[in-house]
Length: 330
Image (cartoon, rainbow, N blue to C red):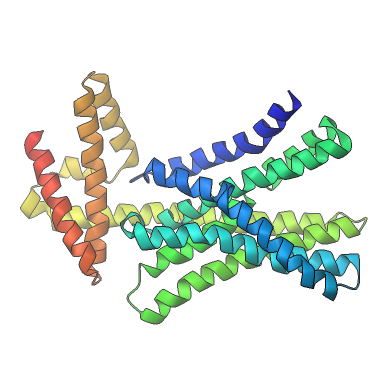
């Protein structure tokens, strides 16, 4: 029974956070199978690779360390951020290479990075909670779970969210040097935020003062609030791109003013889908949802095509044909 409780405390909070992050993507939610793959990458391959690499790095760290504090700082503040953020970033690189069309806006990169982070955090939580159980029983497990799932529950998602944001921003610009800079900058911030937290957490374990822990919490939540601000800004950015597409295509596709008002509003979209669902006609409900999704994808492709992305131009043509087909079948 205790094992099930520990697994519950490790995985369920991360799954709840992941669901909330998925819900925040209001206009065009990412495919669930890709989100699941990102989560699973963080939970399994990334953890395995990190453990192997950290064992390897432990050899030179041990040789270089003259004290326990130095050993913990080299491992926690340098090796761990580099290794863990690097292994989580592999999922985002794979996404960029094979599913680039799904990275429609800066928000998408942040979401995929967050999913990989939540997967990693879930398994890491299990390691720490089982360790606490072996030392102090369920009492220690409960207090540690409150800290890891509550106070620091968003940390790994925040770290890798910066990496994903950097990769997505690289797709937003034409400049070649900016395309190279943004992913490196995002990854650098991810490692820096991770190293910041681990440094002060390390000092907390070597000092009687709680000030290092307070500084860790402060820094973590400043970064989390910043990314939440990015999510809000990205929502308005996506809305503006959808509006721009609809206005530019009003003459050819005959979008009406009321329809435009619905298409640029997540709330009105939800209400229209709810009304479609209440009719009991599942096919109609699915068609409405597909129409909204296709409009959004076309708007993002339109934006990319205007900025010189040839692949986006070809995709836009296919999406516009699909929109016309859906409208004629309505």
